[in-house]
Amino acid sequence: MTKKQQFRIAAILGCLTAIGPLSIDMYLASFPAIADEFGVSEGMVQLTLSSYFVGLAMGQMVVGPLSDRFGRRLPITIGMTVYALASLVAVLAPSVGVLIAVRFFQALAGCAGMVIARAIVRDLFNPRDSVRVLSYLMLVMGAAPILAPMLGGIFLEYGSWREIFVFLAAVGAVALAIYRRHLPESLPVEARQRMGWREALSTYLMLLRDRRYIGPTLASALSSGAMFAYITASPTVFISLYGVSESVFGMLL
Image (cartoon, rainbow, N blue to C red):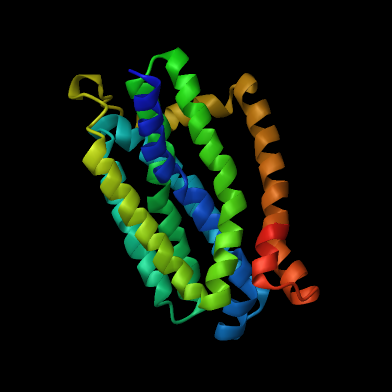
């Protein structure tokens, strides 16, 4: 496979991978506006981000085994379809409680693209080429959190926070359409694993008992937790306390 073909596949998978950072960072600047509209504290609005992370964590534990058993296309198709529908429900959310619940299901389904994109790389490429393709995906994962808050600030400058979720629904639908059109099923039937839930659970428990795995994992988790604690509180600090505009907030974050 040529480098051009590798880059094309990486671009398609990058669209699926970018769903996560966009969903997390794009609406951050709208926290004060959401709080004002629903008449709640910004701390309550922050729960929309917390519920997203809960759904993201739970979804990854489920999507991986499902994709190994049923192939890559079906879980991605179902996941991204539900993600787009959940994003549209968020547009119509009548209360912050509904938005919190919808964000959970948005993450639960949307993580399919993030998780399975890496599995597809393993399916299609040898170890040497996988490193190159994964580096392309890391570029997307690095650029999306930088661009998402700025893009969200532009939406808020000319519209409302609800339009951000319209955009996310469109991104999910377009990413799914591109994937289904240009990438076939990458996991053949004979290579699929018939692992049940008990086997999957035992594998997770085995990993939790592995010191070589749990040490670096905890270090990464604590580092990410500190970063997201800052990200969650930043709209209140910059916008509500210091009066920074939504568009400038995107550049500061």
